[in-house]
Length: 443
Image (cartoon, rainbow, N blue to C red; front, side, top):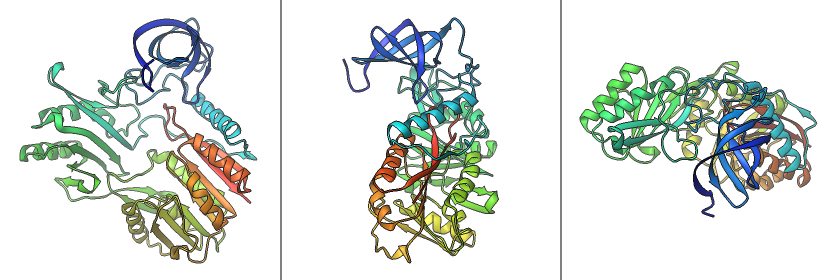
C-alpha cells in the first residue's frame, strides 16, 4: 500500500460525515471502511473531500466544500491562500474555538498519556492571530516551466512544492507583504535556482533576511540584495554554508534585538539563533514562569535548555543565582553576552550534554532548589534522572510538544514523586495545529 506516508491518490471527491476532530485539528470521519482525516473539516459537518493519501486503515484528505449547515465554529479564513499553503491548518476555525480545542487536547494527552491531571488550570495565554510569526524558513523554488518564475513561501499541503502565494497572514507584518518582491529579487539574481531558502528573523526594531546561497554571489547579486534591503528597510545576510558562515550584506549589524519590558531586559541574537516565534506570547510566558517558580531571595535555579537566556536573565533578577545550561555552545555564548549587556552578574551559563547532567559539575556551585525546563519538541525524558538527583522542590516545564510533556509529566509524577500542581495552554502558533504549554510540578 505504499510507503510510510501512504500511497498518493488522484483527487477523488467523496462525501462523509465528520464526527470529531484530531489533536492536530483535522476532522475525522469514516470513508470506505477507513478512518479518514480531513483537513479543513469540523465536527458536525458533512463535507465533500478529496482523498489524497491512503493506507490500509486510514485516509488523508482535504475538504472541498461543506454539504449542509456549517459548524458553528466555522469562519471565513482570513488568508486567501488558505487551503493551498501548508503553513496554516486552522484558519477555518474561530480563534477562540482553536484555543478551546488545544486546551482539550492538552487535558486529554495529560490524562491518557501521562495518567495525570493538574490540581489547577492556568488561564490560556493568547495574543494576536495575525502578523505574529517572527521566525520562519521560507522555501524558494525556481520554476522555469512556469515562465521562469520563482516561488517563495511555505510548502503546499500534501506536497513538497512551494505554494504559489503573494502574502502571508501570520508572518510579521514587515515581511508578509514582501513575498512577491522577494520572488522578483531572486528571479533577477545570476543563479535563481541556487537560493535554497530565505530565513526570516524579526526583532523589535529590525528584520533580518538570511539568503541561503548554494553558489557564491556575484558582485551584481550582492548589489541587488543590498538595494532590496535598503528599499524595504530590512537587514540582508548571506549564508553560503553552515550557520557559522552567515554574514551581513551592506551593513555591519550581526545582531538583532528583542525586549522584555516587564523586566527591563534586552536580548541580542544572531539571525539564525533560536528565539521564541511569538513575541506577544513570550512577553506573557516569561512572567508566568517566574510567578510559578515561586522564587525566594535565596533561591538557586537551574534553567535547562536555556538558549540565549530568555528565562535565565529574568530569573536572575528574582533569585540568588541561576545556572543556564544549553547543549549549543554559540547559544551559551549569547547568554553570557546578554547577561553582560544587562549588567547581570548572578547568572552562570554552561554548555553540556543535556541528556546527562553530572551532579558534581563545578558550574552547579552550591546546588539548586528550583528548575525550569524548556526542551525541544522531543521533550526532556533523558534528563529527568539527572534532574531528580539534584532534587529541586519545584519545576516549571515549558513545552512546545504537549504529547512529550504528557509523557514526561507521567514520569515526574509516578516515578519521581512530584505533584502536577498546574498546567495551561500557550497559543504560540494561532491558526496551526501546534500548541505550547506550561506545567508546574512540586514536591
